[in-house]
Image (tube, rainbow, N blue to C red):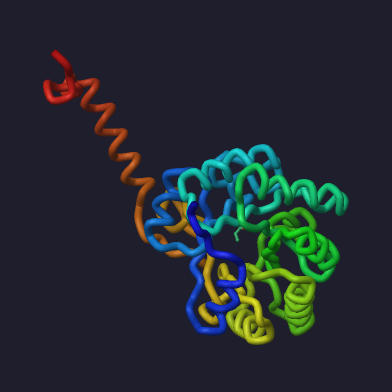
Length: 266
Ligand code: KIV
């Protein structure tokens, strides 16, 4: 039986000043690589939609698609702490539907927790989920599932009023029982003050180095796309390596170089 980390470990990490490292994962081989690299939390993000499935934003991805990929992540990383990102409209419609869908993430894909977007307005839902035994990671600041009402992807919390709202949202999530909260694209100073105001850990993306941990989209880190967002660092150029490998394959097949004797049977 593989023993997995539980939510309590992350609050302890914060108390002891040890950073938490989280990355998105969408399939078995990259989940296995992330686990081998010592990543603490794998997030099956709804960024699955734009990064892997080719959609324009995160909105179209369905529960079924998320479950399909989350199960693959679990198979690739059986010992990792895996968070399932509840997709758009899987938890906004009703408490019953949210409980049902969050339960599916744990029952059908063997995930350890769910993540959902929003602040104080989600407190009752977070309380119900936690009450039902489902650990919840909150998400405040830039909320990609609200891109249509927000009018685009913008840094949040730049005015005193919006900064205070984000701080209060994070506190409301903690109060409701969330075990951690993602802070997406807020100024460094606000990332620091939210982190200091909470006992639970904050996991930042574009929110400065004072957060209790960091999360990034796998594809940005490994350089699968042409461009990298400002908050992400490109640690490799995997897209270029893949293109070059495939160009070499095309050329060798066309020129009769591949397959050679070493790759043939007699
Ligand atoms: O889906 C995702 O990748 C996320 C991260 C940006 C935190 O929610």
